[in-house]
Length: 206
View 1 (cartoon, one colour):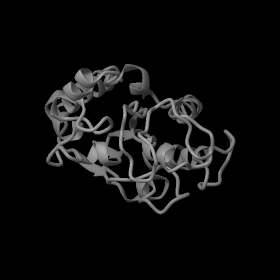
View 2 (cartoon, rainbow, N blue to C red):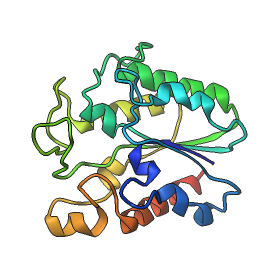
View 3 (cartoon, rainbow, N blue to C red):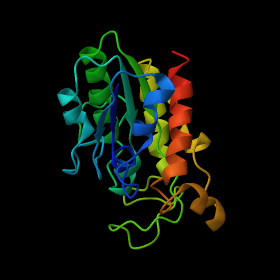
């Protein structure tokens, strides 16, 4: 199984242990390949290890491919573009490149795209204020706009998705945030357990 993502998949602030490490016994995978890099975006609008490029370097023999991405495209204000874009400097264009490329690379593979988690009072170094999922970024988009784009392209490429934007980790109050998050974005160990269970449940349906 290949797990492509950002700092959440990397296990940032959680001893580099993430949902990808915890899912192995749940799905009885022979091997888990973690391709999580902190700050990674889908688009190459910014030079942050873009997934629309580095997916091609993943293990060719994987039978399951999980993509968990989009938070950094929102925080780095990647332009949305249009649904049929091929320009990877836009979010739609990068999604089209990534998803069509994965379909070609793994013609018999099974896929799952995990939408971004909501952000709750998260202190991002490139924002002048705390980031909330419903605030607009520098190009006037909310995190939901990126989530909606992901679902649109997944449906086009017939790729199943898990909507963690709406069914992820709740953190509206300090108590609920502290139960599953480290900082309002990155899950703690229990948060990763919950995510692993949700992803495993979705994979078992395929």
